[in-house]
Image (cartoon, rainbow, N blue to C red; front, top):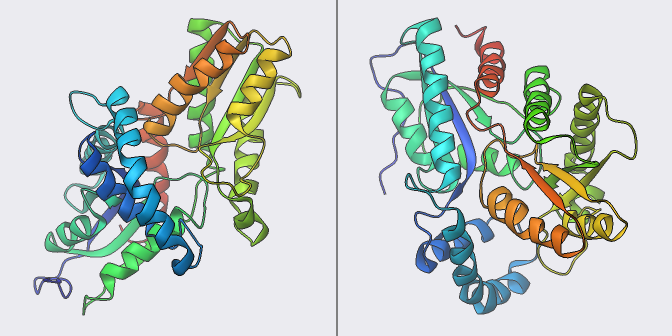
Length: 338
């Protein structure tokens, strides 16, 4: 394997911005999903179990059974331009590049890298360094920090850099869960949804779950989710009882962060709540967990339990106010370099 050893001899002061997200399979097919899941579930940040315990489960059961099921779920949301997450992330990257081109000429280069799957973080960093980047800013597209997501980006970036001789100046944005532009865009997206569809009886603010053990061991993710939710409902003017913070996408038998989104929707419907909306502020772009899990699976759960109207508020995706918020975060962090 060839590793680039650093910046080229024609040194410049160019700034590189690496946008990083989780990633996606290359196709909605079992083999592609198996490759993706294998990479994802081998990550020690994602699954902290001892390898002697975990590998027999992973290879003996999960990678045999799960790829087919997940591929069927991916086929439900796959679009003409491929995976929604990747298509959205590419648009975000292109729009941010346009922003920096207009503001700073050719001094900033934006690249997209996925933690698992393609385009890889390795290929994105290689492309940046080949364009003369001397300073590297990394933005994991996770508003709330978690050891299982953001910290894994740190690992991937440092894993690439350990093969380079001449290292760039490096800064990694840890989180942006209380950024004003991000929160304003979230509130605006919910308000616009309500202006079109009407305000429901309850708003569920659903974040991706993590094992409860991570929180006990010091992961700030749960606290940051609560902080984001409280700022969002303050902007929306909601009172206690009009909204709930919940966690989705749990896996395995160990307890995860609670309350669970699916169980909460079922309980609300059975208690007589007829209309709910769900918004997912932890995802910077729509993906399997929002389009299939929330808007399809959880919709069915709520309606089957007696609910009458279920609304899903799309992620911020490539909304202009979201791109502006991300650009402002990046401008602030690159100000000293530019």
